Length: 469
Image 1 (cartoon, rainbow, N blue to C red):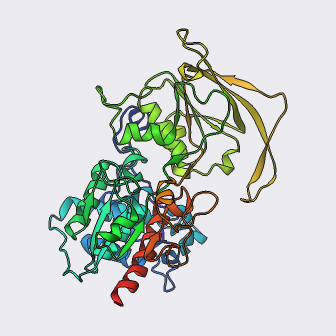
Image 2: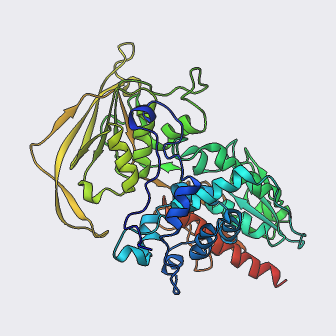
Image 3: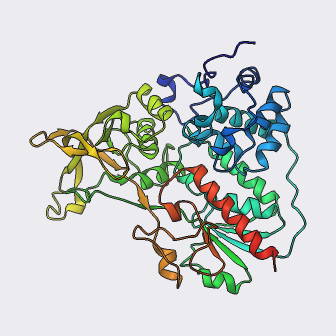
């Protein structure tokens, strides 16, 4: 049978419809489409796709089960190495990881591995009602700081081995960046809640509203009987450009803007938290978070949304799929330009206080690409005399985040690098005995799947440490 050279398209909401709601954009494969896409897999002996997956999902094996119509069997294979299959199938950059290694991709489009993973996870969640069974306890206790992808992965891997695991989350809902950072239209929060509930069924305890470094310290966790601690606290400290006007009202970090919308439901008619709705919005940055912020602003009622990015479309770091969706929805990309000032006016009741000001626009300068920088991308260079202004009512800064310094400042002997990332060895061990770390708390903002991979590494190391006792 001839192989279809193209992967099967993902059904989606029409752009003119989805731009005005928060329902999931991608609708998922049907059984018929999943079977057809699975048939494209060559079942290679050397399985290069597995090597491209940070959590080493047994990809040809689960796709083989799909071919047989055994969707639950496929789910069980994925679950052997992934604690968050429904999440990964939605937000992982498969195109630069497992799918980039696909042998079929040498001649044709690679197999839609991520789309098939999502199909399998969604099929399981819709059709299987049995709860996960907690294994027998091995008598050891481990604390996890943060309930994002690295923390949940570490917790799941340890719980499956019989460890008594407690996850401490600073916010009121478990999920970390999965619930506060990624919009509902890309990752429904019910999906995250289901994944967390599965971990609870395995015996994982989740304590919310606990800020490690304030409510409890890492030293106090050890005093409570925990034998090891994994720090997966993420990178929630937003970066700014330090340009004039950043103190005006109407300037947000993408972190704040998305948290207000995603976690605090600012899109509701009567929200408990204020947020900019309507008007014109400029989002500064070109990553996935910038796309999320821009598309969220559009759904909140913005009449015009700009992406302001200092490099060209070829250097845009966001996933191709997310960029295409943003373009389809009418987001205006202003490339090769960079903000130099946020414009505004002051409150006449207190004209000398810039913090009382309100955004009226953003002044940018055009850029051109010069020689490559340390990242290998061509460095953007300002073009003198090319300044121009955009009339906007809000500016969202999406230029990266850094690890919060709270844990470092309250934990003696914990070494960090100059960017605030916790320093670890190849096993995930920090400079503190029995304290491990991974994910964005180590690397700065990165992908969900890389954080999960770090959680798996630490779980394996913790198990080796404690099982030897």
